[in-house]
Every structure is written in C-alpha cells, then in structure tokens.
Image (cartoon, rainbow, N blue to C red; front, side, top):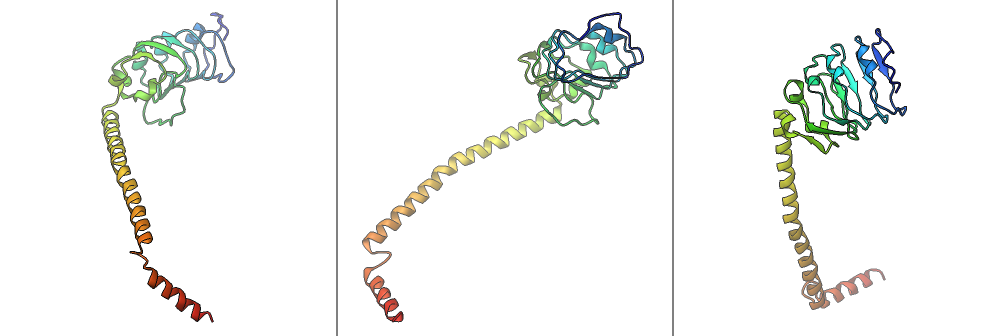
Amino acid sequence: MPADNHLQFNSLETFIIANCPLTGSIPNWLQSCANLQFLDLSWNLLTGHIPYFFSEMRLLFYLDLSRNMLSEEIPEGLAKLKSLYNQNITNKKHSQDLNNPLIRIWNYLNNLSGNIPTGGQFTTFPSSSFEGNDDLSGYESSLDPSESKGKTRKNLAGTGDREDSIIGLPFVIGSIIAFVIVVTIGHLSGWLFPKEKANKRIEIAWRRTR
C-alpha cells in the first residue's frame, strides 16, 4: 500500500481493498480518515503491526484484517471501541453475529505476540478468535464465562461417549465371535440341524415336486 503520509481522505467512510494482494504495512495516512466506518484489508500480504490509531476511530464499526502477516502486540485501546461490531483478524471462516461486538479478532496467518488485552469488549471474545497466533497468551482469560462452561460440558460429554464406545466395542465383537462358534459347532455335531430331520425334510420336499 502507498505510504505517502500526505494522502488525505477526510470524507472516506468505506474502504475495501481485499484480496489484491497488497504488500507493505498498514499506512499511517489512514488515521486522517476520521469518518471511516468500514475497513476491509483482508486476504493481502500486509506486514508490520496493527496501528494504534485504530483505537481512535470512534465511528469504525467493521474492521477486517484477516489473512495477512501482521505481527507484534494487539493495541490495548481497541477494547475501548464501543461502536465496533466486527473485528475480523482471524484466518478461518466463522459466522458473524452483529448482535455481538467484535466477533472475531486476530488473524490466523499473522504472527501476533504478547498478551491479549483484558477488559472491555475483549471479555466477550471466544478463544477461537485468537487461533493461529502461537505467541499470543491469555486465551482462557478472554473466554466468555458461558462459553467456557459450555465448552467444558461439551468436552466432558465427548469424553464419555468415547469411553462408552471403547468399552462397548469388545463386547459386541466377542458376542459375534461366540455366536459364530456356537452355530458352527452345532451344525457340525448335528445338534442344531439333526441329519435325520434334514433328510426327512428333503424327502418330503422331493415328493411334493413330483
């Protein structure tokens, strides 16, 4: 992206340059866009850090920096943005619910590091919002309490199902093998199908066909 700080777009409200693929860093001239409401720079090759001035864009309600190669720390001030409805900086497709602000955060392909900011709207983020950034810490503290409980219940339920499957499988296999052995022995010994009765049935069937 052009880095000329003399660029001015004071009236710009929507700025979408996705999947271009742009290189370089996020330019500083964007901070002059005081009226910016919708910013999408996803699916590019942008490097560097997430600029602090995003925290000062009070009208910004949508921010998508997904599928880039951004690094360094997450600006603390982003948690204070009240009008931001979706801040997508992940690399995976997730459903977006505009009733919940800041649905998805940091880019899967980015190399963000440091601690995830706490407080504000960051307390509403699911841990999946930060996937793909191995150097970020504080995943669990960012979990919404209801999501954390639901995730725990789901994991416990999944563990129980797996244990039931593991325990039940040998029983089913053993029952099948035992049944086959009993039928085979019974057939060979004439216990299940006596030869006399079998011969008599064959003779009766043969007479009926005549």
